[in-house]
Image 1: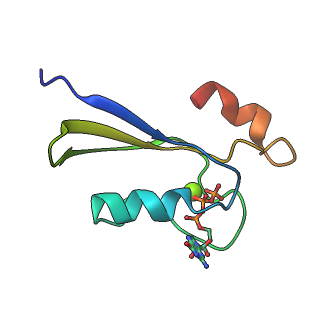
Image 2 (image 1 turned 60 degrees about the horizontal axis):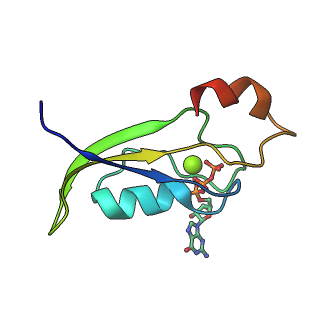
Length: 77
Ligand SMILES: Nc1nc2c(ncn2[C@@H]2O[C@H](COP(=O)(O)OP(=O)(O)OP(=O)(O)O)[C@@H](O)[C@H]2O)c(=O)[nH]1
Ligand SMILES: [Mg+2]
C-alpha cells in the first residue's frame, strides 16, 4: 500500500473548507452551499501534490457546530 501524508482541512462552519477542498483536488467531491453545516461527515480524497507526493485530503464539518448537530457528528471527526 502507498504511504500517504494526511492533510485535514479544519475551520469554523461556513468558512469555505469544502470550497478549498474542491479547489485543491480540482474536483467537485465536496458539497458547497451557502447554508451553514453543509458538510455533515468527513470527506476524503486522494491525490498527488507536486514535490510532496501521494496525500489524503480530509474535508471536515465545522468545528463550532455545537448549536447544530455537532455533538452527534464529533465521533466521525
Ligand atoms: N466570498 C467568498 N465566499 C466563499 C469563499 N469560499 C467559500 N465561499 C462561499 O461560502 C459558502 C460556504 O462555503 P463552503 O465551502 O460550503 O464552506 P464550509 O466551511 O465547507 O461550510 P460547512 O460545511 O457548512 O462547515 C458558499 O456559499 C461558498 O460559495 C471565498 O473565498 N470568498
Ligand atoms: Mg463543508
